[in-house]
Structure formats: structure tokens, C-alpha cells
Length: 224
Image 1 (tube, helix red, strand yellow):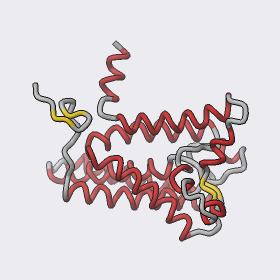
Image 2 (cartoon, helix red, strand yellow):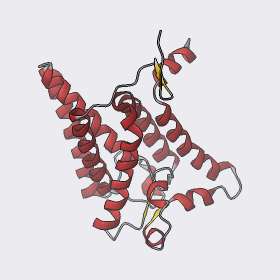
Image 3 (spheres, rainbow, N blue to C red):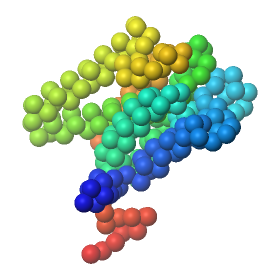
């Protein structure tokens, strides 16, 4: 029964599950495979390496993580929001993820030369959060559900407060073990992710992709 519920919940979340699994595998390799940490190092966003031509790090850094706690928080949030957005955005989901990851990485390169290294799905998860809020607010306004509008705006305010706290304090709100590892959060990544998510959400409302349906798989329309 539990398995059936899990399958039902994750149905239509193929790319979300694939990417979350990839992030877990990268960290697991570092923990259990001799020399496996080299994979995470090879994927890590490193400013000098990217400018030297290792452009795969622009996207690869989002799949690597510094600590287990950071990994767990990022993957849980990514899967929860990713499943919602993947079903809502349909075919536009994967390009939207890639676009948000690029915006976060390129933005860090251009806007803050002090960011030397970066790892984590938090920037992309921030984009997914903002997409979710845009759709939630728009739907609540259309249906005149004032309570949902208020809750969505409150969620957006909490996100802004989290970013502000991390900017002022230099410490992460959730992944507390980053400080022990000598890693400071990168609020700019979350701001850029939020901007990407807002753009994706607004574009999705203007030209919505067909939402996921169990009857549509692998590019084929199935009839019942």
C-alpha cells in the first residue's frame, strides 16, 4: 500500500526523480567509493576552472553538495516542489530547470567575483519555490480565494526573509552543518533562482504547456 502511494505521488515526476537521484549518487560516491569524492570535485562550480574552459561545472555544481544535511534539505525540497512544477509545466519543465540553473551559475560568475566555489540544488529549488508561488497566487486571485492569496504571499515573504537572514548573518537557516564544514551560504544563488522562477511562472501563465497526464507518456498520446 505504501509503495502504491509513493508511486502515485511520484507519477509524472520523472525528471525530478532522475536529478534528485543523481545528486544522491554523487554524494554517496564520495562517502563509500574510494576516490569517489573526485566526481563531486569535478562537478563543483569553481570560478577559475569555469573561466579556464571547464564549462560543465556551470550545471554540474548544482548536483554536488558539501554536507549530508545540505544534501538532505536540498533533495527533499527539490523533490516536493519539483513534482508540483513538473506536473504543472509539462514539457517546459526540463528546459525551465536548465534555464534556472544557468541563470544562477552565470549570474554568480558575473555579479560576484568573490564566489569561488558553489555546490547544491538550493538555487534551483528557489526557482521551483517561486514558480509554485506564482501559480498559487495567480490561481487564488482568479478564484478569489483570499486566504490562499494571503498564505502564498506569506510564503513569499518568508523566502525573502530567509535570504535576508543568510545575507546579514552569513549562516544558513536550515543546513546548519555548513558552518562546521567551513562553508558559507550564497544568498545570491537563491535570489537568482527566485528571479528565474518568477520569469518561468509568468511565462507559464502566458503560454501554458499541456499539464502532465497519466495518459500522456514518452511523447505519445494514449487513448483509453
